[in-house]
Image 1 (spheres, one colour):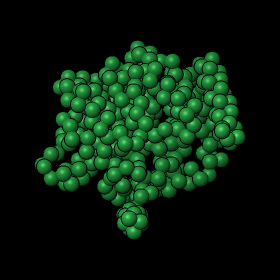
Image 2 (cartoon, helix red, strand yellow):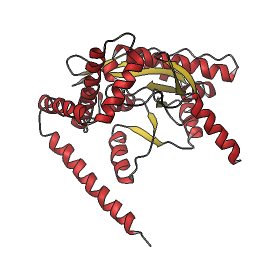
Image 3 (cartoon, rainbow, N blue to C red):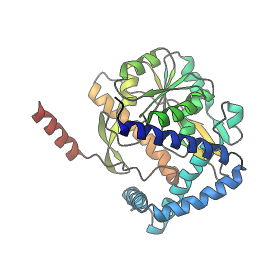
Image 4 (tube, helix red, strand yellow):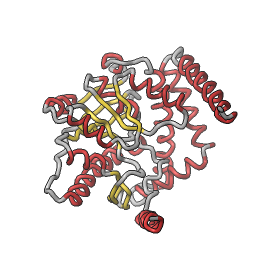
Length: 316
C-alpha cells in the first residue's frame, strides 16, 4: 500500500519540476544582458539575507587569505563569490538548449583542446580533472560537447524527479551520468575502454582520502583520481571553466599531469593527490571569487576520522 507521505512528496516534487521548467522557459524569453543584470541584484540580496552562508564564506576565505588579504578585500571577494554563483546559474539556464561547440562558442572560448585530443588518442582513457570553479556544470559537459565520449560520477538528488530533470539536461549534451555508490569497477571499465571520465575532487567528501595541506591547512582530500590513474593507464588532464572580465567564459584544458608510480601504493596515492590538490589551489588562488567558499573544505579533521574508526571498530 502506498503511504500518504510518499504520495504527498510525489505531488510536491511534480509541482516543483513544473515550476522549474516554467522558470527556465520564462528566463529564456529575455536577453542575456538583462538576465545577468537581474541576477547581479539577486546575488547582492542573497549576500545580505543568507547569513549562514555569508559567514561561512568569509570564515573560509579568512582561513585561506587572512595573512595576505585585508578584511575589506576578503569581504569584496565574498560578495563576488555570491555574484559568480548567480551568474553561473543564470548562464546554465540560458544555455539549457545548447548542445554543440558552436552553440557554446557564443559565450565560451576554448583553449588547449589539443591536450585532451592527444590524451584521448592514446586509447588509455582520460580522467578529466575539474573542480567547482565558476560554472562547473559547463566543465562537466564540455568534453562530451567537444565530441569525446564522457561519463561523470555524481550524487543522486533527493527526488527522483529532480534527479531525472538535471541528469536529462546533462545527457542531452552527450554526458553519461553515473550515480555515486559501489561503482568503482564501472569507472575502471570506462577508462579501460579508452573513454573520458570526469571527476571533481576539490571538496571535502566521505570517500576515501588523505590529508593534504590546502592553503596551508590540512584538508581531507579524495584520492579517487590518483587511485584510478594507478589502477589503469588513464591520463589525467586538468580542465576548468573560468569567467572572464567580459562575463563570458574560458574553458581551459591544461597539459596532462605526470603520474608518480613507484610501486609504493600508499606513497604514490599521497604524492599524486598532493599534486592534484596543488593544481586546484593554484587555480583557486588565481580566481578566488570563482570558487564555492561556502563549502566547508576543512570540515573533516584527523580527530573526526580517528573517532569514526574507533566507533567502527567497537561496533564490530
